[in-house]
Image (cartoon, rainbow, N blue to C red; front, side, top):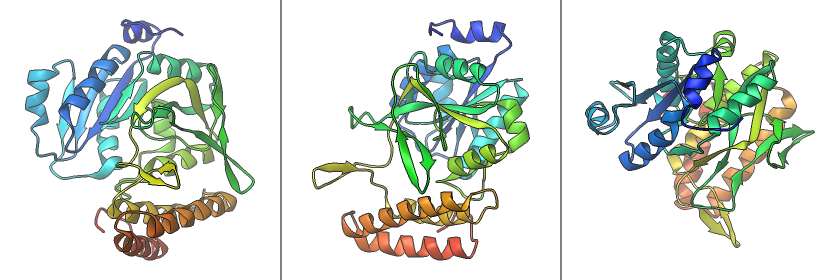
Length: 308
């Protein structure tokens, strides 16, 4: 399926109407503009859901990007899941057949949506499809698709035209048919940030849908802050408060009845390695240690919410 500026129109003629839901918080407007310009020809509808940023995005939209259909400004920061759910509700009201979730710092290739749609149309049992992510700060590195093999997450090799059945999908760039959302349900709002997409992915798989990683669909997407260089390698870096949510929500996920034990064991090992790395090689090691311990404690006692 080849992309062109009329992709959205052609798709609509086939009964497909994609609504892009862009979640923002204190966005870089130049980067957001680049995303909108790349994405607008590929979708039928576009909404920005802003999590109470100080910048006046409704005014910016009127002046700079009138091609965006709407800006929904939240009175407080609802987190990623809450904002996504508001955008999904908006897309449903527009009669959209598919929802494309986007973070504010992601820029899709010109044919990304077309490639994702083609993969979904080839697999009626597919609950969602996602692109291959590349961090522009690390041009030769991609965020790989993975599959749980025994007690290890195996990286799946990507070549042009390959579509993998994958373990889970990153939210940004994830294309979801509306009927799947109706059956599986909304995103977890009480987890605020981190593992919201993984939880929805595993819940979708438990409902007997497969998830597709589409190697021919590409998107630039920055993960974390400036990378940490350790022993000649670059590693993702996050602030301590993000590690609190990553640890807490991982433990909360392990408590869910639809999560297989071996998945929890494999993920828990990776989580412990991450905690150890950040406490040894990360920036602000003591802060990371305290955030991780609090995350483990709150997750073990089932505490969710936006605060930490």
